[in-house]
Image (tube, rainbow, N blue to C red):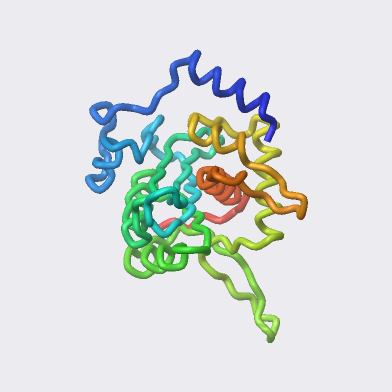
Length: 228
């Protein structure tokens, strides 16, 4: 990512005093989410507005704590403005499904884009089967009989990740997304292209919020929307 642009955006956040809402300023927040406002896992800049479409990019980790990866959610409205963020490396996939479900339903039953990797499979199954959450991104595949098969979740591989990351680079460069999270901007500084063409955080850094951001953008690019 263009580090000069990243730094300018960080400066703008400081100058405009953009901060997450305190708990007493948030109305209608689901009870399961309240502790996460208090401990800093969940940051909300804008509460849900009626009849607005929201998109949630969800990157699922195993919740093992320490210096391991975090489970993250990036929430954007239909105009590309970031409205909320979740990040924690101590939340197990089945617990994270409850958080995703609560956030998705609160944000007007927004479109969930959940990555099918690591704990993502367990998370998707719980959301779809146990929680009956219907507005979820699907990817199309074909079987040996040339039949279309639609599978819930974002299937990440070398090709799809490269396309998604480059979409995020383009949207960021063109100002099509309005990022409020300094945590995400810090991750973007250490997110690099390897010599083999893959995209990753430099050793010792993380890219979990970056992943949830490009997942969210894939949802915004798609025409999927399943009212329920």
